[in-house]
Amino acid sequence: MSAQPQTPDVTNDSMEDRLYTVKYDDPGESHLDVKVPDICAECETNDCVKVCPANVWREGEDGVPHIAYENCLECSSCRFACQYDNVVWEYPETGGGVTFKHG
Amino acid sequence: MSPELETDTPDEPNYDDEFDAIVVGAGLAGSAAALTMANRGLEVLLVERGTSPGAKNVFGGVLYTPTIRELTDFEDAPLERYVAERRFSMLSDEDETAVSLRPGEWHREPHNDSYTVLRGEFDEWFAEQAVANGATLVTETTVTGLVRERDRIVGVETDRPDGTIRAPYVVLAEGGNSLVSEGANLKETESRENVAVAAKEVLEFPERDGVIEDRFRLVDDAGVSYHYFGEGAVGDAFGGGFVYTNEDTVSVGVAYRIEDAVAADQSPEETLNAFKTHPAVAPLLRNARTVEYSAKTIPEGGAESIPELVHDGAVIVGDAAGLVLNNGVHLEGTNMAVESGYHAGTAIARAAERDRTGADALRAYPDALEQSFVVQNLERYAWMMDAVEEDRDLLFEDLPRAFADAGTEYFRMDRNPKEVHAENAKHAVLDALGGWTGAAKLAFRYRKMVT
Image (cartoon, rainbow over all chains, first blue to last red):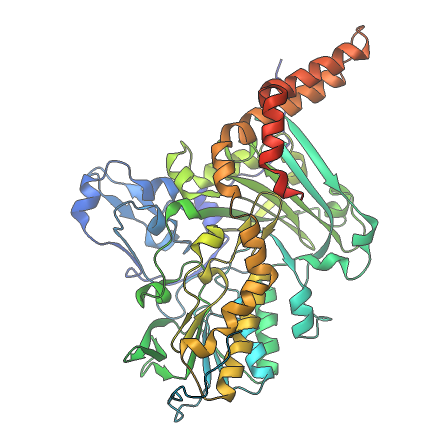
């Protein structure tokens, strides 16, 4: 017997579906980058990947995080999380990036 | 306020310029500053990088409105619901122990000046109030840096063609992700112990009519503000979860320190999923559909991480100045943003009357902020973060479980007399606290919450 009655249906969309709920204009690639790729290659903690709420930072086979720019919600957690101050984050170009309807 | 010395050399701001002041960011702090300055006759340019004010903002919370009510006609503001109930829940992984407040007074205007809002709509309305009073708003324009002459800030660089705009005063209201202020060495990048990551969803109910009222026991425009902490909310991280009712949607989210997010074995998105499916939360969200997913960082460093607020020709306000209070009971920031924008705008208007732009002439802003609820409240709880950090396991794990156990024990139905259950309940809590001594120590440590 389960300890709790079955919890009712709660939609937990996939990240892809979630991001569909947000409007993107061309985010540009320049607003997010790594300063020194060698540092990322050496980094074993990948804090950027762990903290990102939108799967923008993904651990690649080469150990270097790969960046899915188009997912970026502009929260900038990666910038604060990186222990090596190795995340370059700029405001997306004029009119670009994410737009929240509700916010 | 420090008196101005008559012998000071008057500043020589560039009066060829079209504007007296440039405000970077049309969020609540920026629009409050713009509105205040426009009201006092200054030519103000409000620069916003989003397609409209609020387009880049994320908010899960309650807007407290006493200052906004003072600044402008509040009648047609896009408010979602007034807060008729505040609830604080401790969650273990399967229990909830809650305290709920529904005072009658909150149903009567002005509803304790507490409203849920959606920033996409509210910020646009608030910026329009500044525009209606004479400010100029430009959107889709990103400020990329500041213009300096010698040590004085005399304008901004934007990403527009010929994008340099000069003005005697610059108000930096760019939010917690303050790249311009950091790039100009006006503040340091906040450390990850002092910044929270928040993931939030806005949910809609396909069955719509009356669902929110029924589910949250509400009538008309009444709404709720539910806060959750403990390991059932965000694991062992420092932070919590929340549910707020909007007019016909619900905002649900989690916020916790980045320091803890990197140590956790789940991503913020997974933490949000777990919170949404907690047995105490899931029934509130049944059959709801996600209409927006968003994320943001929140500067939670408190009084100690406020940067220098005034510089020659510039001031820093709102989230960029780290003006957020999060002590678990009080979650405030937007009201502090408005208050800081108001005081900054007032100080600039006074300095402009005397044609002065130096930091000394702008000190009226931090002085007023010191005297206001903003800094007083932040300083009142400055001790608390360290205390909570030290008691983290107790507050977030042991106590939520102990209270749930005590409640279960107190109301247990068997053939024992009540005295046995009461005794067991008492022990469940006392054991977690480390006996009467532990309880007394804890009460003493947190006495400032109530005194």
